[in-house]
Length: 110
Image (cartoon, rainbow, N blue to C red; front, side, top):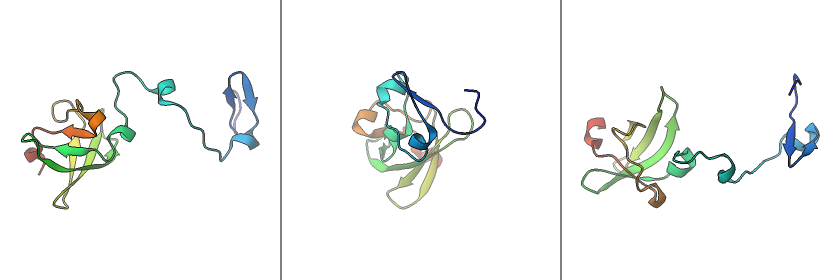
């Protein structure tokens, strides 16, 4: 697009003018944009955080961009907030469909 301002949206070969797009919500099925094997924040927000004993210790409340992998913000059940590196050495998403994230070395971040 060679325009300096405005928005152009093309859907199935149809172009919509700016006044029909600006301020509008556009919903896309995740199958259209999600990469296979990737985890997105909407999938982990509110997920339970489980330690190595299987005990639920908190909930994912936010995600911060920090370096290559980012950081998960976790509100623990005791009210403490901790930051977990979003890296496979620390966090397992094997049960993300159940909204559970496993952190085997959680004590390292307390």
